[in-house]
Image 1 (tube, one colour):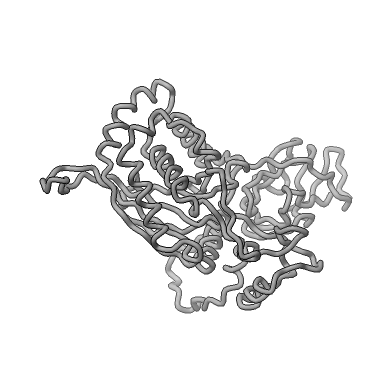
Image 2 (image 1 turned 120 degrees about the vertical axis):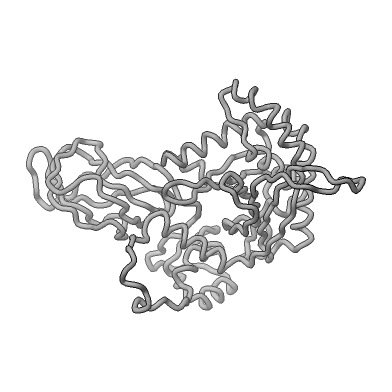
Length: 397
């Protein structure tokens, strides 16, 4: 039988083969994983629809295939090898996901787009017929172009003749390639500006130390990240323009009344940004539990699709690795991100001009300059610092 790549979810039209779990000649059971594929929504396991024998694998790891393409030839348990199709699968298991939204093909249908969108598409060399718009009635928005920017950008390629033949070559595929595409798209679409400030977190360090044991008794590790998420939410409430997105197609800002905070998690396959939904409604203990759950799921490849959607602002921490400063890249359609450095004890002057030892941390903000000017970024940073320097209020809230 011809086994075709099944439906992988709404809006998914193609996938990249990550790896084959089976080989030609292998006997498989119904529901056994055949291969893993990567879409712009998730890494998915594709299971066998019934017991049988794999006759031939028709695609290679790293190859992109469309939904409905034949990917292997299959012999069922009764020995049928005709070229009829294997029955469609009802479900695939989602393991993890890359942190971005991606447009899908329009299959040549008529499309709607404002003149500003058409102008940008022409400038970037993007064919609008390839995109299904996310706006009303399928209207193509500016944000729908973002994932294609990296494909359309006219960036000179390095001549392979200049590359050393002595180096080890590793396939640039899977999650790593998806991350590269989305980061390039973000930098080429969003005019980033950086705002860096430092914060005295001496009281926060003391507070965490005093509460670590009680949190441990609840089965949760109290990390600094929970405090920084709390502070980010407080700053978003004080400077609501940051908790927003830009709908360039309609020349409108979309201001959110919910606070969904993304947290960057390093995994063996690359960076994943799960989202703490309604972070403003969670206590410090609940935030710590959610951070622990999301981080563990991401590292184990068990991320749920709903945990990767809807972020309005992102916090990324490099402090546990050892960096002081960073220039983090914004995740569209968000307008900002903060990078938290490591906490270092340094000599500083107090309000009386006396030198004292203090626990200091750098906060590195990146903002979308199309929407947020320097004064707004500074106000947001000040609001976050104010919260971090008065941490007692965060414990019971």
